[in-house]
Image (cartoon, rainbow, N blue to C red; front, side, top):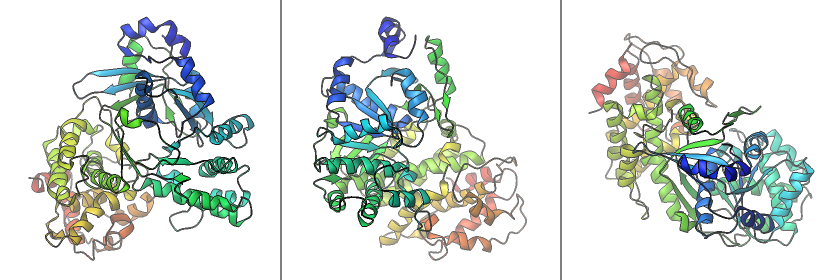
Length: 538
């Protein structure tokens, strides 16, 4: 069986017999509708998009609730489109790995068109301009990672590619966001048609990050006389262009070899992954957990598709903010980061396996329920305590979810300030609470310092996951070894006082000494990590 439009049509009975859910909508009609009156274009056609948004639209198409499909575009790694989506006629397989050990297999066919966001490709870019000039277009959404919205480096300097586009103007920009804003300018030039630009990346206040980047381009082009001076006003007018905040939650690990083998045994052909020249790993299938949340600020100046009928929650910005903080600061992300750090130190390669370790399980339970939950603001639409219990009892322990601590440990220096620092700040702001009572957050910080030594609890060297500050922060622990000799850890104070990393000055608030005490114990020798957890995780 081949994963193409003709292949699925010809082998429909065989697919069904193998247990696959197949598209039930009339493809030709939906395809024609989408080309003629596009409604939704998405930038960043990665695993999350194919597992969540594409499947969401497929369900709505099958129910007759929507009559146009998705358009996928990619502006960084063109091979995702050229070598992964198009060879399969924009189809993909979603393997939903459920906690009850069952696997739901779905052929997802809601992507009607895939395009390369390349301003030098006349054919592709002209089509994108057509889409952006269409009055029917209601939203352009994004999953391009938080880094995709950056216009400056950590020191505040404008990135060279962005600076070049500021001078070049909207005719043929090279940067990802420059090309998107160029398309938005085309929409402005064709009648100032409203549009919602919707970041669906997993980062705090994602709409603001997108808006800041778009405004930077609009202002620079107008200032340099490269765009109509009204363009900046258009982008700033929420009745014309909106930037809703969103909270998205669905664990979508890298395509797993065991899932691939299962699909091959079903008779699916040509499942080989594509590793692009930019090192993007793309397979014709996606494996993901069953649980998913998408909360969106209801701000759509040109209307919106009825995604709420597929489970999406539209609400106020304030509520999105509460849900996002609930998840990122307490109920999921801090627990994930904790398991990532200690999982690497203890030699684990699966998050689900870590949850079988009573010490690690108790650590994240204490972290979420004891230290985090007291400062969570209830968002009203989701219950924080129930959310944590679902994470700890269903999502993380799911043995069919091939998620690794090594993947989650990526960019940890960029995550600590939000995932733990915000909880510390909430304790500081509450007169009924005391930061001195926090014991597990400092243990996570100490675990990260121990992780930076790049030696596991058995004394084996390992390679830390990618992190933009890795070389800088590792220098602080370079002289420490695994032994129980007295250690002068005063050299860590400069790092521990870095508010950009920890969210607060740990030295100033009196938490640094506890972090250093924990580190002494964690690095006392072989087996010290396990021994320290046994001592402090009750």
